[in-house]
Length: 364
Image 1 (cartoon, rainbow, N blue to C red):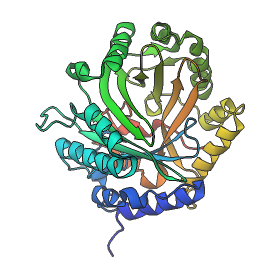
Image 2 (tube, rainbow, N blue to C red):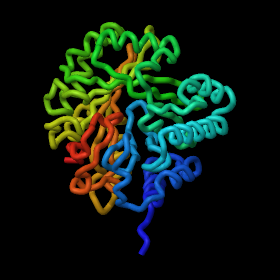
Image 3 (cartoon, rainbow, N blue to C red):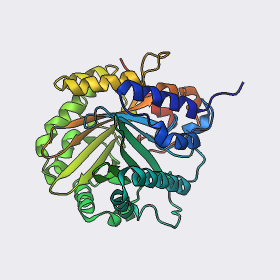
């Protein structure tokens, strides 16, 4: 008996989640890409060798307080054996197709201008994974489409001047930062580019104040301490390679995104989700939206949605801090025993050893 492909299971899950959350189904938009990317059968260990979600199928849904009623997810296109350059080109083609068809010519021209350096005609022999591809859907259809291009330190000069300035400020404030990718996002009426760094060393949360001060965000340090300190069970220090720092906007109006790779923490509390929701209790609409999202990704046969990979907080000068949570769905995860011997990349999760990736926790 032939085992079902991951594509079939993933498409069924996305359809059910869209129905549960009241969004349009992603399948008319990216169903073909899912078929091309997840054609191997369920449980195939080739899926473990990816850089988006090492050790499991490279499909990462997320919840964001900034977009509480959208169905958001990111994938690594074309399967585990695709060359990085081919994966980059495929993600670019899909991005251009959706942007051109749904957002129009002006949006496509903006994307082409921003992505020119990263989608070059000549192969980059140093690419590790090439690109990832993300979408978000609401009740009206495609809300946004984004592409994550792999980034190296010598490519920072190719960033738009405001973003390059933010990158320089970040490196001056936190010398242990290493650039890992740039994200280009197109929405119906605007676009945004972000650069994301990995912090190579361990740090205390108070060490962030040097960067926050340079960005005019010192008044947000207390929110960072509250979100991470509460959800992580009173932890106010982070181990090496567990923090991602994302920057977008301009030096005058910056947006800072701090992401913690939960699998890198040696002592994530079993009550992580309860502690996180406690911190959201003063925002009941967002909390209810997150609960709907969790329920939508919970298979009936398991009773919980999976392991959490990333907890992030987004900071701007004029708006309160907003939380995002990233999920490794249980129905696409692989067992600890099967992961022995796999060496995986750190680009998204901060994890180099496949055996460490299940240190996160499901719903307590």
